Image 1 (cartoon, rainbow, N blue to C red):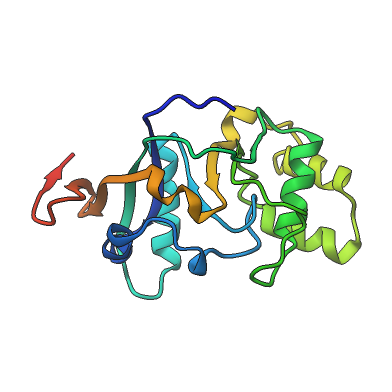
Image 2: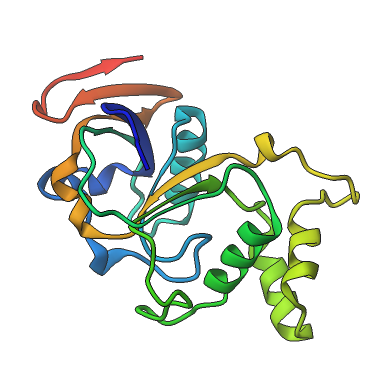
Length: 204
């Protein structure tokens, strides 16, 4: 898989995590199970999408941290990686998401060998409820695929509207990622700070 570098990626989080990410971006001890592509560091090519993630994360945070978007550069690619690429929603994509969403215990993984990097669409925001229903009713992958690709009104969702995510599933990517800066949402505005200078925060 040939990925041209450098590439810019964005990660939605809260401002209280910036200091930790400055020291290390990939900290697998904090990666949670039960997500679309399993445990990993979730990024996107869309800053707008990352801002939505940041607002959602801040709303759920217990420490009152402000929405924050990290600007991360993929500077190079490690050798012998095991990538997985989903160009759009598909039965294979849905099966992968469903199997990983059903994992509740950290360290549990339905993959024999989990991919080092996974690129593909996000599942719909109601995926958690759909997974819960599917598990209770013992529904299969085909049912899940039909459910997450339709709106509440039953209309087929456009894959482009699902959003994109690039997930790093291994800490071996650490030396290939660079934290360039971050945006903090303050008083209705996004302010930018350079990762190398704590005092440099600009209104954007």
